[in-house]
Length: 97
Image 1: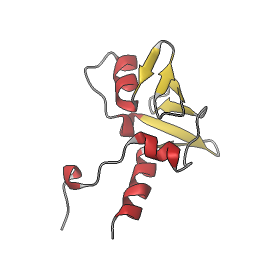
Image 2: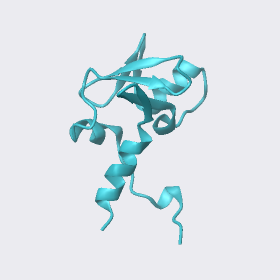
Image 3: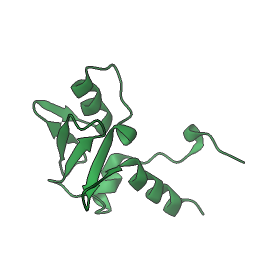
């Protein structure tokens, strides 16, 4: 039995920062490699003159009306680009009884 994405618990990006999975000052990178942004303590991202959520900043940088920030951004670990969605999946797994 599969559940729809909408049925899964919502995880704000700030929770990733609160849990220490990523830290303020860390850089995120777009999967296409064209953009980067710095994480702030409140869970917002800053890239050039753009500041906002993972979704807002991704959309602004791409000139798009919307963006799924969970699949747009990645972090680097030992030189590997890892989508931040992997961190959301870890949190969701901990939330599921």
